[in-house]
Image: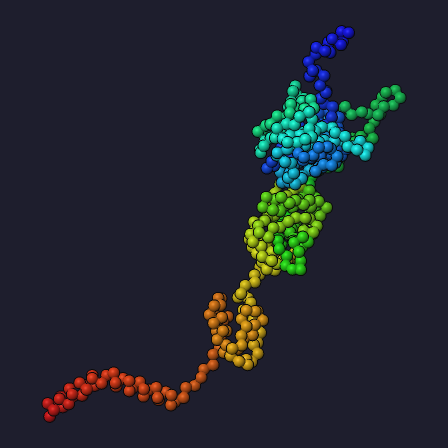
Length: 459
């Protein structure tokens, strides 16, 4: 009877579900950027491969057919946390990435664990207009804010009530600390009288430097540490027909070293905001050679209107980035030539980049190298095609030459000199003399009168 009376008068919260018994969803950010944080508040290492995160839209009324799932094969150590984030966000912390999915107005994240052929709920958080939640949904967080699980006495609050267990915070605190605990008292094998037996991996009395061993461990060094980093050297955003964007767009990488460069852990990203990402693990670049990544293999997109690309190393540090291009022309490649990003009309996947550009000038030059056939009529001319053929005497050809631009020597024509008949010259001279006598007749008359007077006086 005493126990019943005490139970009736104790506060209800005293009978809340104990904390620190299972994985918890501890923070969610929606809106412009997104991430989901999962924490292990227990004293045991839990394998996340047995769990998954599920996202349900605000209209969902039951669990079972999630809009999106997030999985990973990684242990979560006691007190550790892992993060799933939207693409190109928290790259140095996230265990996995996803395309932006979480609605700011409402939705539900469920953490479930596999139980035979079914998945059972471990934790769930609903916000905004969500119809799935624990007890009651929390209000939506808004941009640049997050739903953060409350902490009480160094323990996460978990009363299975989303509206009470979470706060909206302006200070985002994504936590991806997941450290394996150190075993301070490793167990040693013992014999029948409880005397510890020597370990099988006991190091020699005088370990050789650099050979490793229990007392001579050396940190592993990335063999690429002393190598030059690969660079992006060419992009083809708009392949010429019959090639297609889906299959034949490509990104070219160059290895400046005299040995193979392993791309384990490296990533390629494209887009003005680097929305698309491709893991290069398992690929390598030959010495002083190229690696061409085609869109059919990577699903990386290069927009015809504007885009750029970048290369990240195994620490998610950007080591190389192209200039942004605009208005890609069909069949032209955005290439690094002489240290400058520029367009070239000669794509060269897996080879040295060449600068060539198709212009009206090159079309005209190519047409001049072809000998024109003998004209049948002065009016025959076709100047719109690189294969056009026209007669020397064609007026249209002469007009076109006045519009051409370039070195003068490229457009000079040899003109035949025609001889003038002597009678034509004589006639022209006589006409000029007659016209002069007519124009200066009064001056000539006055001169003659003065001349005759002077002659009379002199006599």
